[in-house]
Length: 254
Ligand code: NAD
Image 1 (cartoon, rainbow, N blue to C red):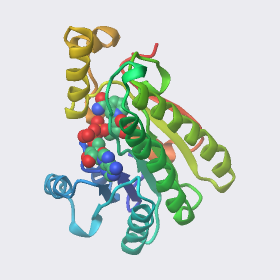
Image 2 (image 1 turned 30 degrees about the vertical axis):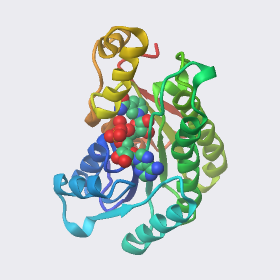
Image 3 (image 1 turned 30 degrees about the horizontal axis):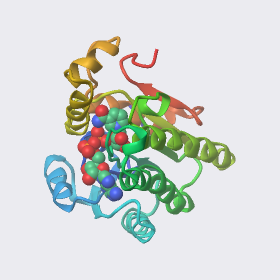
């Protein structure tokens, strides 16, 4: 459906929920996939879940915020598969929720290191291996369009990813490389559950119910629903779409 046969797709945060669901969909579309994650054990488990030929999958343990790691995982992908057609920059962490005066600076820096520095480094090393028709997708979030009390690191880092996407979209358009963000709303997975547990403590009511009430569709998204939108942006089906923020949020941002 998406014409992704033999495309080479590099996914950071590939052992996590959205990364793995996307890898599964890409593999079902005939793509070759390199999964990058700092959690080596989770990568092995992810590979067991994926139903694919060993030649079509590469597992790379790396910290996306470390420049030498970025250079290594990009080079390893190119060595194995010859090029990069799709970069899905998706690794993420949340930090914490706290009033500005109490917000731990280390948590702030750690979140920026993954989302902003990590997405920047991935593109910096991948772009030289991309050709006309390639696509970069960054997982931002509805958090990249909102302001919620105390969510200093995550919300501002997700906004920064939009800035990074916009700069790259304009710069790389003449080379035929498209760059977009995908902005999920709350997804039914462990990452969001941890956020909601912390939120429940902050607001004194159930964090999951809080979100379901402000999502017009009345439910969380599934990782597979996010994956389908990534495939659209990865493929030539979206050949005239660059510099765009694609919300996949059940209407939360309306
Ligand atoms: P997840 O925790 O299942 O996956 C994130 C993955 O990133 C993990 O496997 C983790 O090991 C990896 N990672 C973290 N730091 C890393 C680093 N420094 N180097 C390499 N890998 C690293 O969570 P997820 O929901 O699949 O999150 C994927 C992306 O989606 C994140 O960017 C997150 O901010 C974004 N997002 C999630 C939701 C949600 O509700 N879960 C909503 C909107 C956006």
